[in-house]
View (cartoon, helix red, strand yellow):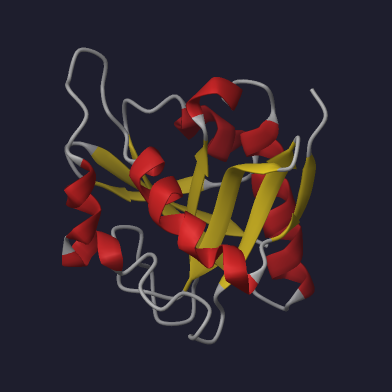
Length: 157
C-alpha cells in the first residue's frame, strides 16, 4: 500500500475529532462507546483549539488522497501527563489500515519531529490490553507508572 506521512495542515485539524474517537481502545467483546464520549472534558483536552497552543503538532498518513491516520502531540494534563514540559502523544489509524506499519511510521516521524524541535521526551497513556503497547516499547517507550488498566509510558529522545 502506498501512503505518505506529512504535516497535517491547519485546515485538517478538524479531522482530529474523528481520529480521537478511533483512538479509544475498545476491548474485544465490549461495545464501542457512543461518539459523544469525545465531548467529555478529559478527552476534549486532546483536540480543543488544536494548533493554538505552543507545542501543538500533528502529522497525517495519507493514501489515495484521504487522511487515514494521525499522530498529534500537545502539552496537556491528560491521562499520559508527566509534567508541563513533556508533550503527550495521541495516535490513530483508521480500522481498515491497521496492522500495515502506518502507526509505526507515524510514531517514528513524530518522534523525529519532536527531536528536531529540541523536545527531550514524550509520553502517552495506553490500555494494558492494547496490542500497541508492544509497538511503543519497540519505539523506545518505557513504562513509568501504571494503574489497574493502563500504562503511562515515556520515550526519551
